[in-house]
Image 1: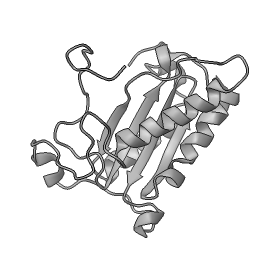
Image 2 (image 1 turned 90 degrees about the horizontal axis):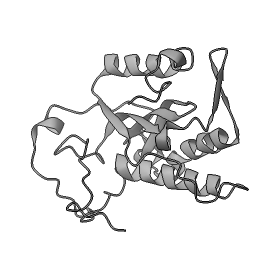
Image 3 (image 1 turned 90 degrees about the vertical axis):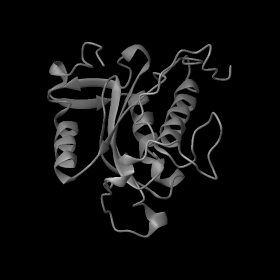
Image 4 (image 1 turned 30 degrees about the horizontal axis):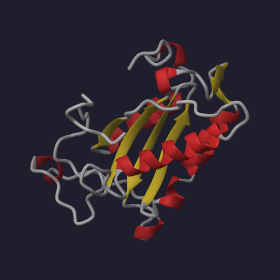
Length: 195
């Protein structure tokens, strides 16, 4: 069924007027459907991936192959979610050398609708964070649903959380959070199914 805003009462949690396909560094959290713990378990403060977790890990690492202007930074697959940093505009397609990209003040100041020649009405902008996450989710779902006994399972929540990383301190804080996530699993709001 095609999305119809008069029927489907979904509200966007994206920053209004922000171009999520522009150069930038983004912190992403993607949760499993109903926050099911399907990717493995935490043992002694370390994430132990099961087969589905390994599929998610490999799909995440394929993102730069599918989006040549994208680079991956720190990430972790947790039992029921993924945290990762995605950098748009610093991949092989741009010829840069692993440089973080932070938005300028002008990136946030124009609340007018986005105008792209490549924008799809009622669709995802190609090369945007939305397109990257959509591609990752569908690829992972296809692979896992092809496993014996796993046909037609709903793997992901419909939405995802994003945070535009604005500077080095913000980036450092988020990298540290991702790295410590397995050790702090029992204190994580996603441990009990929050977020």
